[in-house]
Length: 238
Ligand SMILES: Nc1ncnc2c1ncn2[C@@H]1O[C@H](COP(=O)(O)OP(=O)(O)O)[C@@H](O)[C@H]1O
Ligand SMILES: [Mg+2]
Image 1: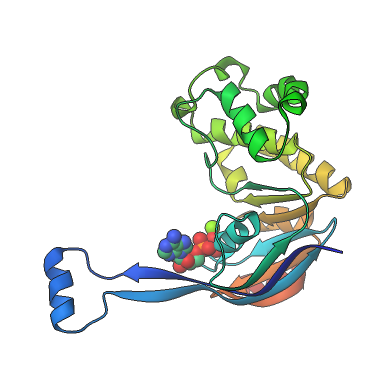
Image 2 (image 1 turned 90 degrees about the vertical axis):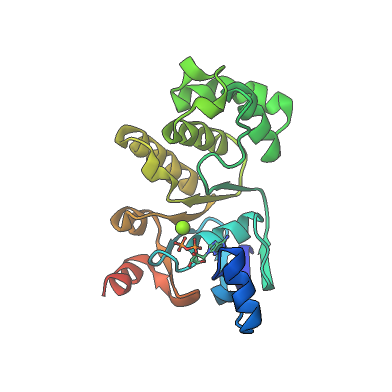
C-alpha cells in the first residue's frame, strides 16, 4: 500500500510585476496585467510505497519545496490530489513550527503535540530529545535567540523521536555543522532501516543518491525522470 500518492498535482503562484501605486495605476490604464501565474508544479504524479527512500531532485525553482509542502499539508494543490497515509513529519523550513517567544523546552512539547504525541509520550522522550540536540544549555532560552543551526538541532531531534511513518527533509541538514550532519544522517539511515518512508531534498547529490534508491527528477514543475537515484543524478548533471 502506498504511503504517498501525488496525482496530477498543479500549483501556480501569482507573481506581481509592479510595486508602486503609480505603476499599478499605469498598468490599469494600459490594461496590462500586473500579475502573472507562475506554474511551480504542472501535473506531477507519483506514488511512494511504505519503506521507500526517495530523493527529490532538480535545480533551484524546479518545485521540490512546493511538492514537499503539499505532502506535509502546508500547501494545497490548485488541482489534482496529494494523499498520505500515516503520520507525517516535515523538516522543511528552519524554525517553522516553532514559537519564538517560547523556550526550547516549551517548543519541544508544542512540536511533539503537532506531530501527534501525547504529553506523557513527550515526557518519556524529553531527555533523549534534548540529548540528541546537544543544546541542553539553551533549553530554557526563548528560541528567538537561537541560530538556524540550533533550530535544526531541536526540530530534527523532535522529529526523529516521534512515531512518524513519513519523514520529509528539505535541504535543512545543510544548516547544521558537519558532526551534527553526520549524526543526523546516521539516524536517517536507521529510520529507513526501520521501514519509515523518506523523501529527501539535498544539494549533496552523492549523499542523497547513496541514501535513497529512487530519485524523482523535477524540471520546470514536471517529472522528468522517476527511477534509479544514481541515474536521476546523472541526468540532472547531464
Ligand atoms: N509563495 C510563493 N510565491 C511565489 N512564488 C513561489 C512561492 N513559492 C515558490 N515559488 C516559486 O515556485 C517555483 C518553485 O519553487 P520551489 O518549490 O521552492 O523550488 P525548489 O525547492 O525546487 O528550489 C520557484 O520559481 C519559486 O520562485
Ligand atoms: Mg527548495
